[in-house]
Length: 130
View (tube, one colour):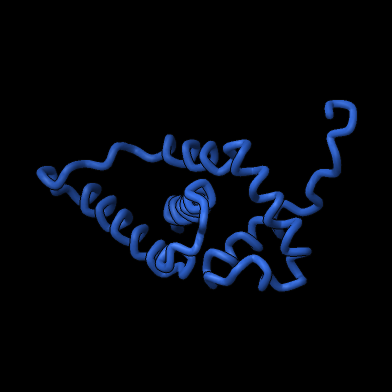
C-alpha cells in the first residue's frame, strides 16, 4: 500500500553478507546463523530484491564500467590481463558451493546470487593497486 510502505531493512551490508554466506557455504536458508537475523526475513527480503531487479541492475552497472575484452587474436599485455581476470572470475564462482551444487530451486534466485557475487568479484578486481 502506498500509504503504508512497511519497514525498510535496517542494515543492507549485513543483509548482503547473509546472502554471501549462503552462497559460499551452500547451506539452506534455515541454517543461516542468527547473527544475520531471522532466516525467513532475510529470504523474503532477497525475494523482494530479486523481483525489483536490484541484483540485475547492480551487475549491469558494474559490467558497463568494464571495457570490451580484446579477442585472442590481439595478444597484448592488456588482453592477457583481461583473459586472466575472466578465467579467475569463473574459478571463483565454481568455488561457491551454492553454485556448484545448483541448490537454488528458482532460476531467479540462482541469477540473483550470480549477479551479486559477480559484481563483487569484478569490483574487487578493478581496485587500483598502489
